[in-house]
Length: 240
Image 1: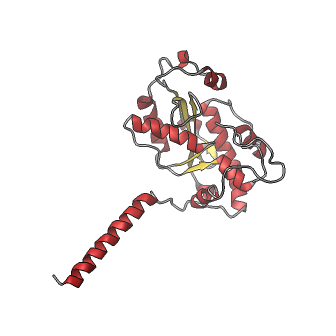
Image 2: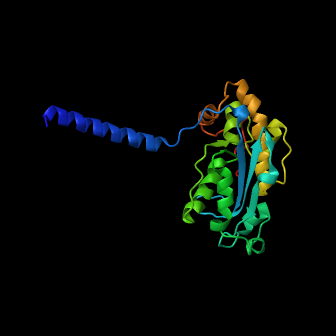
Image 3: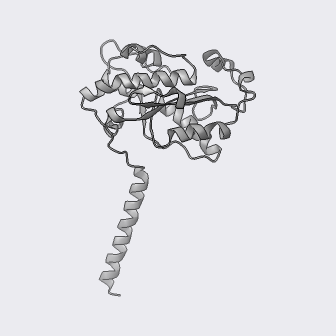
């Protein structure tokens, strides 16, 4: 074979490998879906603590939303046995103790219906990274596929819309958009509340020209989740 032809074929092969690696790292493409037509699932967890790399699930919930309304009857909520004692500090927040989860399923059993609800839908949550890190770590440990759906964080979206709003806790966001929190510090209640807050944010996002799922994902990544501006002297993201 002519040397120049061999070199050209080698260069083409290297280019194909580089493109394949770039595509793999790029991850799945986010479809251009209008936010107004977005069916999503709002999620939440209750846990043994606030370290997503070390703590464990004690409850989880997924509530589908269609046409801007929650479909609670199609949702899923479950206590989960974390396989360890629940610290008093965590129990004081969510009210779930060791006796409550003694007969609950382990993550390997509790997660599959939850993961099935999330598959193919956009995720909406408060502190989405915390929940998904913990859920996906538990899923991988159980030999299950992790959640790979695009995730919208209501705190990050609200911060992009109102950078001077100082309270990015779930209660603070609910107050901002006039949503009444539902059964606070229960997985289903917090998931429902997060979904309802997101629905209230939709027209505000559209007024800013954020009209698609892809645009919303880009919008929430614009800056760090740190309140700034007049009146932004306290509060902040106060945890799940």
